[in-house]
Image 1: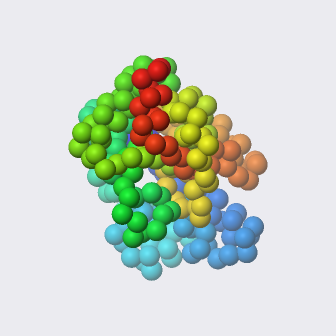
Image 2: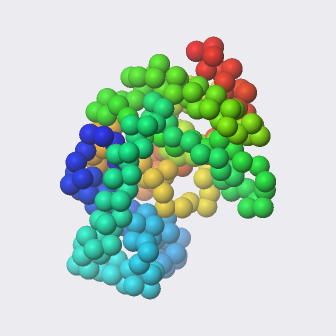
Image 3: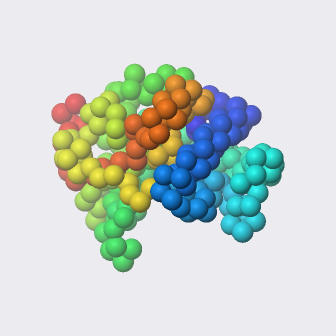
Length: 240
């Protein structure tokens, strides 16, 4: 949803429709997993986007359709404004849409001292598909690798988690080791890494994927965690 093309009002509409889809999924999972909504709502982004409102306040409002609409505009939209403003600053500074930070391996022991080069991605090229700009993607990744080597010489591995790791065009940016070291992001957490596939390259709600999702009752592009060594990624990019 975050790109330089959408207005804030369009971003709000995309988020509204996406969160409604997420709520429908949480309701369906209540029946499928025989859990209560407070458990399955954790599969959605509602909790993060309602912060810092206490859970005991936003959850009762969420379960009622009338108050859910009010909750969205009173609690979620201010957070969207902050995120929108931040994206307007960070996307132009990205390397072909890639952003990075040192971070521990997802799902690893929190006391583990190892940090990995952790990638995040935004479509810097909207309304184009980013994969129509492969040279810039490869160049950006290589710049990040070299930047990390210079500033964080202790980092030896790179990771990225999200739905993009289901796409051959994205996977081809990385060495074979990347796909061999893939794991499902489990347990599922509400994040754009799971829900981002329902946003198209322009930043709008993806009608076709949402319809298929509701019809099949599950994700065709789940959150996938991939990693490889920094050396393998650099060698792969140098050969491209």
